[in-house]
Amino acid sequence: MRPEVHLALVHHPVLNKEGRIVTTAVTNLDIHDNARSARTFGLASYHVVTPLGAQIELVGRILRHWREGFGARRVPTRVEAMNLVRVSRDLDEVVREVKAGREARPIMVATCARKRSGTTAFKEMRDRMAREPGPYVLLFGTGYGLSDEVLKAADALLEPIGDPSDWNHLSVRGAVAIVLDRLLGERG
Image 1: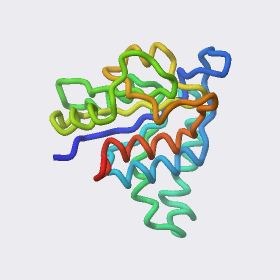
Image 2: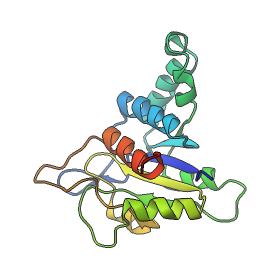
Image 3: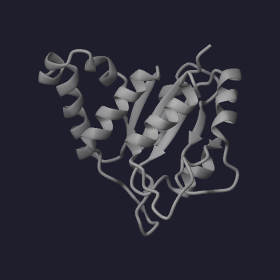
């Protein structure tokens, strides 16, 4: 049985390069490419998390373009991927939507590019997902990553991708695709 998995791309609270909590800008590429990855790996939904009204409006315009506008007419297969996208003001809203009608809250799985103690190996998380169907919410941060409060509140923290070098700043779109493949791909 395939686990129920949701994706959340968090734009607040995330860190800037000085380690301060900020809100980052939503990008068209992140919406578009992560929606395609979410559809490819059979995710239930993809949440763009931002508290900013102007950014929520921007996401709405982008989604209308790909769901019903010129983008939908030009590339009709893209509509399926874009229909997975939701906009949430904060992680509590994501939890409420995913939990809707269930007793238990979803299992929150954070990602981080920095080495930290207490991380879960991909194989271990993949095995857990095979035993417990979820729902799971995979949390990805923009900017310089998720804030400590989000990381501490998560039920699990995945190990970083690869061996961090002195330059470890993989795009979030790349990280999403790699993590989804490691957790849900046929080869693991």
